[in-house]
Image 1 (cartoon, rainbow, N blue to C red):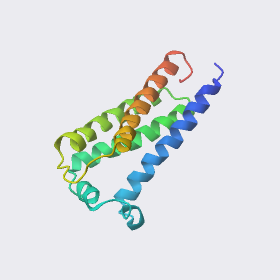
Image 2: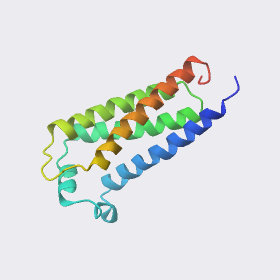
Image 3: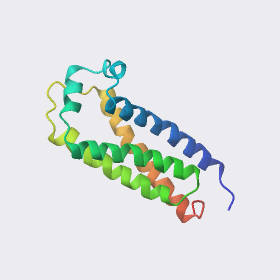
Image 4: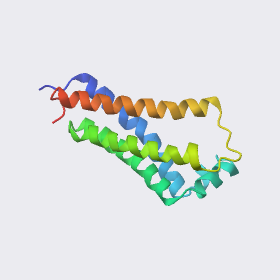
Length: 140
């Protein structure tokens, strides 16, 4: 089956979108002074207090989403599974971030809440798209 043009468009967008999340993850985990300087003391304290399972879920969310994007471009049916695992990581890390963590001083702006919602929307749409392309035989 010939690869539809939209696969390259969606795959390219997915790689660029996920590159932002990967950059954030790497800069935070390596404790880049320049990157962390953009954060408030409350944001830094929030990240420092995160338990290991939060860190693991965050890593799963970020890296499986990037893997899903790359697998999409490689036309692999495993893209849907990677996006699905990423979604699980996102949900688990959100349980900590929005349900368990001490959020003292972390008042999110409407723009920040909107961006968080956009992460969910984009990831769910990528997962659905990859599943649809697998069913159509585009991803093998």
